[in-house]
Length: 570
Image 1: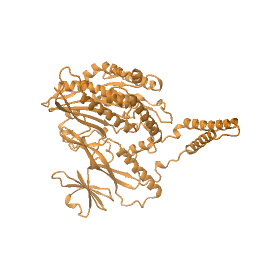
Image 2: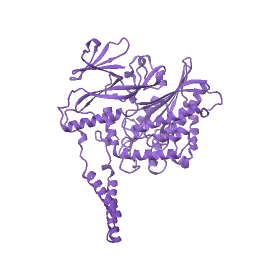
Image 3: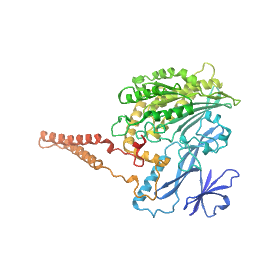
Image 4: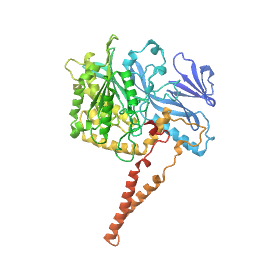
């Protein structure tokens, strides 16, 4: 907890730590930050409790301070309280907006709504005394100098989403955390699932695919499963990320836009950078490519396989598994074909394990890097199955499971486990695709259900609408929040003022009018049936032709990002 003291000239941020006297003062005119003492806070200041600071950002009206006003405890990790930031406030340095024109005020309101859009997306967690951005194994292998750094200095920048807002104050990793006390055989242990979403090449489903020139993959997520029992601790890490070469899949009003592989780019440079970093951080790699091996996804699978073979790197294995083909007609048991085929590799990679005396018993030597098209639905199903196989071994070695016992037989834990992985899938999907994940009925129950299929249909329809008609705004919100786009107060018009082509307004009006006239002609009889049929055919043809022209020019009608030209990032 902290206090925000506000005067007309300054913000004073006071920490409530025992013995702490330092107060951060922020000048609302010069934007200068200084450390002062509690005695320097004017008694007349307006005081309110806050839970933390996200940082500051410059918008059209000037600088804004973003503070956390509400938090919720989600549990403890190695004795340290972990919090979820659930409510925020964006406070202007300026006391008035009278210096702005009407257009500037409209743009400023749009930018504020963008920041609120990101803040209200689930996923901001923090801990004031533990580094959530690193895995247990990474933290166990650091130098004494690393341990002496502040949490912000040593945080993994991939997972610090407010890094550009104000690095010198505090960082908030965007992660998904599930922490559950569990009981098996009368033994209570802590089971924790942490998914860390990278802020490099961050964005929404159809506007951010593949990699950038630095090798950062879209929708890259590091997922760590942790078990704590009787002083011992175990960790198993997996990753997911878009297929790491240059490809795109722009929305164009079609249900599944055709993915396109760039023909004018040297794919191997970024591809090599990506896997060089993966091997450096995680060790050996086994790629699990779950995309279809026919149709529009086939060229992507072939390109991925060709590039892996071209690297000739013995540390990287490639496994292609056509998820939809293998599991067609509800044959979900066939997923075990993939799990069994990589079982030996999983045993070789092992996991991180520390015994009750603090001795490191085993280290994880490699990770599974899973992907489908979105790295969401199919990917999450496979990751949950690999994680289950890992926790089976961990709990046996830690003395929780007896010899011969199976984790699947522990009904209470299975319920917690499946629901947590389904919740993890939903959180990742909402951030990237705009809806909850598909196929979560299998993750929750171990089988496909008719209700699950209906929910998938609903989520798919919502995804279609959002991907085509609101994802441009969501992408702009992320770019603004991460600092990929910065507002310059001295500039005139912002990119928000881009004008739409005449087709954007004219053709939908024509289509609606023609369709309405077709319905009216159907409902009102003419002098003869031939006359009525002629009217219906005329207006129906007009509506159909206009709709075809709209779909043909689909990119002109979708909600595209305005702040950063995503083509430049492909």
